Image 1 (spheres, rainbow, N blue to C red):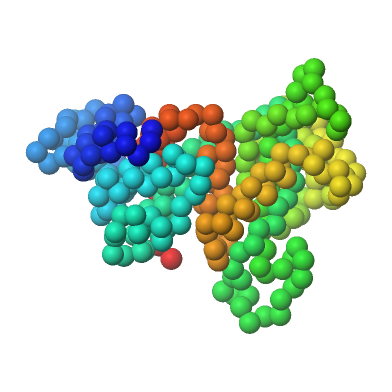
Image 2 (image 1 turned 90 degrees about the horizontal axis):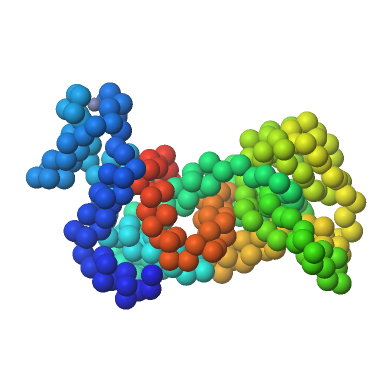
Length: 310
Ligand SMILES: [Zn+2]
């Protein structure tokens, strides 16, 4: 869907509300009071009314727009921007495009959409052959660390640790100079507080199917992975060869870093996960084309957000 199509299909607030209602009807509204699933539609109030207990649910309630006062069309435009291009958008830029006075609500809206994306991907467990490694992303120094001497390298307060996993399988029958090329499917990126084996094994146990085969370097952080997956191949990785053994985690890390550097600056560690969720969501749906907007609408209609302003 390009900008012209978007404007034709969603020319005003009413068209966006009708579409959002259509999706909620399809996904099903659940009464927050009694858990009932059957509702009347009160067209004069634009609310659902529970057939069992009479509790009213607004069109926004229980969705990504829960508690938001921004027009539906703002949300639709933001979803369009986030899904129609290969780029991300800063809140400043979206604010400018919408000519909205205040920055904070726009910033919050984008983060809520990113959380809806992360929530959707969170339902998926990786499986098959998986590359795994850590990435170190530049972020602002956390408040509690300000004024303290800066540590160097990977332990620096300016770096946030991220566990990166990529379903990556050698292509059958093909080979090139470097051996068999690998094809990537789904990826995940997860912030981690430390690189201990306990932390990493717990996350892998959640995010990866037990039948998987993991490929990693020979770091001691990975010694317990064999407890949670069928097969783990730790390899001694020469820095120059990392692109052959763990190609997709490293491509994903460098693309995500570039996106952050180009569009979003001075990210607080607390917000990094949301940006990574947006990156992974779009990456994982890179072949969806025009369907991506509708998918994000569905994810938004069925995800109530816990995101809080700063
Ligand atoms: Zn009810």
